[in-house]
Each structure stands twice: as structure tokens, then as C-alpha cells.
Amino acid sequence: MNDKYVTHKEFNKAMGNIDKHFNNMNLQFEKINTKLEKQKNDIVFAILTITGAGVGFLSLLIAIIALLK
Image 1 (tube, rainbow, N blue to C red):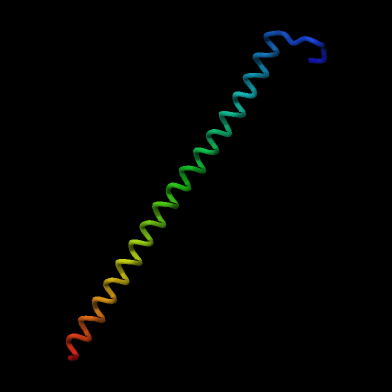
Image 2: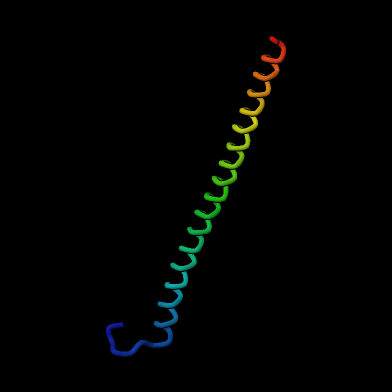
């Protein structure tokens, strides 16, 4: 590719290399998106679990207070 002009073969090879790099980048972004989606699901599950535990604990305290009266 030191010449002024590029042959079709050289051009196709270069474009193929560029396509490989972009496909690799797309795969990496898909992996990141998948990880973020899993983390989001884990965070929602954790929030629901903590909320449920808090409600259960408050219900237990209310029941104990009601029994003591």
C-alpha cells in the first residue's frame, strides 16, 4: 500500500479487517450490556428482598406490641 493507488484485493482485505474490529467491539458492548442487565436485575431483586424483610420485621414488631397491650 505504498503506492498512490490501492488494488481491490488490498481494499477488500483492509475493509475485512475493519469489519472484524467493529464486530469485536459490538460483541464487547453486548457483553457489557448483558452484565449491566444482570446487575440491574440483581439490584431490583435485592431491593425487593430488603423491602420484604423490612415489612416483615415491622409486622413482627407490631404483632409483639399488640400482644403486650
